[in-house]
Amino acid sequence: MVLTTGRTVYQFHTRTKTGRAPQLNDAAPDVWVELNPSDAERLGIGEGDLVGISSARGGIQARARLCGIRPGVVFVPFHYGWFDQDPADRTPRAANELTVTAWDPVSKQPIFKVAAVSVAKLADSGGVLSPAPKVGGSEPPPDADVPPTVGGPAAHATSGKE
Image (cartoon, rainbow, N blue to C red; front, side, top):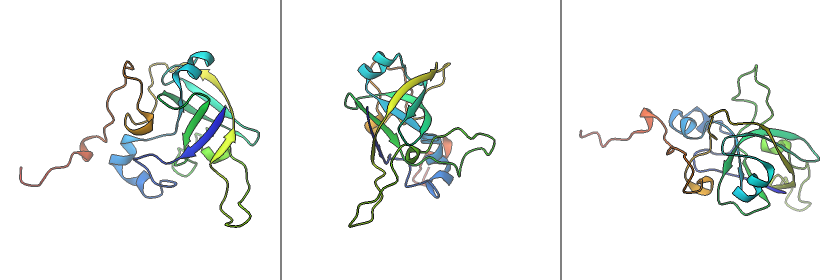
């Protein structure tokens, strides 16, 4: 399968700032992997299942979000790494663990966007949903029982006139 990495609506870069905003962190607290439902069915993967994603460079673990991504393509947000993880939990989750260490010869921009990967189910969800937000590219299929994304009480804005 082809991995692509990228941004999500709730986080920015490596979350050095957005990871400290309770509303944003509550809305997208951890890494996930987006899979097309047909690929997930072929692999025996359901919403929220723990999945291993591996490439020639390395591997990570993430909960599955079944969504409208193109078949054969896997998406992992690159915002999640080691710095904000419980020091006792060394579960690999940084998307760049999967990508090659190479640079464009002209711009010197690292090639952290794509990789060939394999995907395998590691464990059933056990009732734990994917931490992916329900908005944007990670929107689950309409028949999925996934609650709306919320940032908790701190995310509720008021005009100050109530």
